[in-house]
Image (tube, rainbow over all chains, first blue to last red; front, side, top):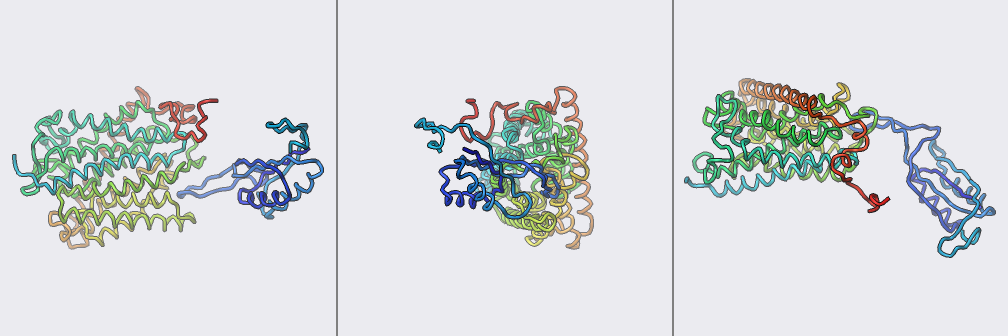
Length: 112
Length: 422
């Protein structure tokens, strides 16, 4: 099993959710977060003063998938999240040792 | 006992309640503008001002401000403990109101003036020292200035109103310039917030700011039109002028801001409304409606520019008391010397543009200059003494953690209901 983690632009979250649902994903977790990558922060003007904002708002999406489905899910997220402009975010994949559905105690692929 | 005019009395009583409502409004206005970690402390400073000022007002405040004048400088002790006020009346023949209605009305002015200062020292003042400051500042700064400009006693009262004959309908000097100059002194003595100019420090809750601005706008009708101390055409003039200038400044502030920064902000429209209400405060009973419009249009732009000066000069007037109240108050006082007209108020004057010459303008400049200098110097002294003795500025760690938990054992937002359980 794999954990797919994507940091994306907040405005793309709905598109990604719809695409993942269409791809048959059973569950996902999203959280609001902030950070910067190679683009660094940006400057903002507010009430006549200019500030550097280092941490830019992003959304973190986490999806647990079977090994067999991993590549298609990754492609689905990357396609839906891409705008072509800087700040589109990152996606990474980590191996998962065990998954358990807490209510039933099912393990592994059955718990997804 | 002389005959009370019940219409006038009803309006002054209602106005006292309206103006008192402005201070919780200010608490909400200011509270929304600070960061979430110190919003309760910000609001608490206004509520403490309501408490302390009222106690002082009863004991000796009213007496020193409105008691029999000693040389136009300060009132006497004739009303200590509000003595000789029960069942007494004040005001001209035919428009007499109970002294206690007037005392209540004036108390609410004292409260909001000192509460305004808290905006200059957001997020970094020891709460106990603030309460002490309120008591000392009301005593040594507010009461004399209120006496100078408000205590008309038929030529032998406060020197600004009775001798200099500068015009200040509702407190351009006493409330606005006084608070603006004092705020500058406080901001200088307490120093900048950690991260000033580096961190954005944006308002944490703009809906609160807009609600507070609305409460201030509403209460300001009592402030300005109530200052007529009668329920007649002068109050009506003051009320419509207040509405006009407030509305006009709200629009020009955001227009200026849109041109300068690219966006019209809600903070801008709220600040603009307050700037307009401030500017019209001294002038509301002396201008005609078109004069109020001109003043309001101007006030929005001038104050929107003025609030950015703190970045240039490096003083952390956190919530722009200097730029809005100080600068707006000066504008309003000058406007009287320029565009006042006796058609609006026969007890007023004609300004320069109504063939009144420069006499009135000179009086206005003299009044505002003395009040600004006195207020700045006295406040600087008071704040410095407090800082050097009991301390005024909080410890750095307390400031970074936020003043709500440091001083009040509370935090404003507990969305999950679980924050005390982990």
